[in-house]
Length: 348
View 1 (spheres, rainbow, N blue to C red):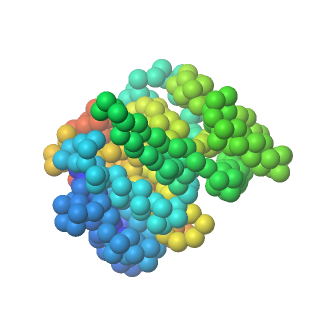
View 2: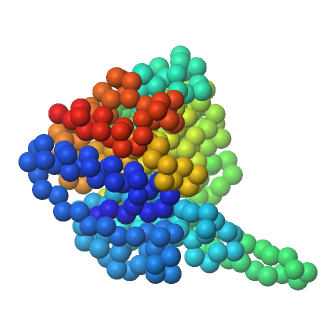
View 3: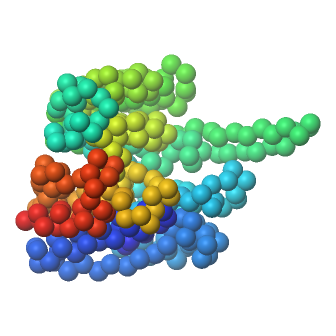
């Protein structure tokens, strides 16, 4: 299922589709692709950010590739219907509770990062963000008070099983990497984080072959730029993960380079670049498609179990970057389509 969405979403999803079709031809596969609307485009057409029909179609497919949601037209605090509601409903409807964001610094892009080169050496980490709990999904209230004042509440709510399953996934994935898990919380202030830390310690005790350390979110934010090489697998709650992964984008030089995979216990996974809809460059043909193309690789790996094909895409992107292919965000001149052309040429 393709959900192009808003802003540059349709442009980068079109390139992701090209790469998916190219790798399918190269390896003798047949792909069936369907398209639905989400976000601002869906509001324009249907009055809602995600229709029941679109959600049902996504639930019935093998995987979902999403572009981005968000448009200035609905970027108004007074708007009752917002594009982002479609994304939250999609995540909830698909039951994807874990967002995986691999962050690896490409040697050829060290100069694109504002950090010093010595701090970027060997950076290869995986952030696992809990996706269906916390502030984004907790109870919300709005109360009109005397004197024209307003009181609003967003509750950070977690069940123990939501925390346990994301931590257990983190330990499983760490076993195939450098066997280190950093659990990020705010246990000095929040009760939800104290429960998070308690369960992290329990899961850590059950996996003694994996090193576990606990870190407060403000310290983690500092360490991501001061000493990012210390991290292997980072696991954290919804909002903390949202913020930290956007911060981590600075390590690789551009948000346009980073893919993500959202997976659950069953059903289709959801794959998308971590960047937003970027309405300021929409329609200009200059968006970096690499994050979307690498998300296609994750789609092949996690949902379709096609590891060889996933590696082929990742190698093609790596070769293109190594050989100097750059879009504007990386200091180059290639258009969105031209960058994809270079990647497709290098598919093996």
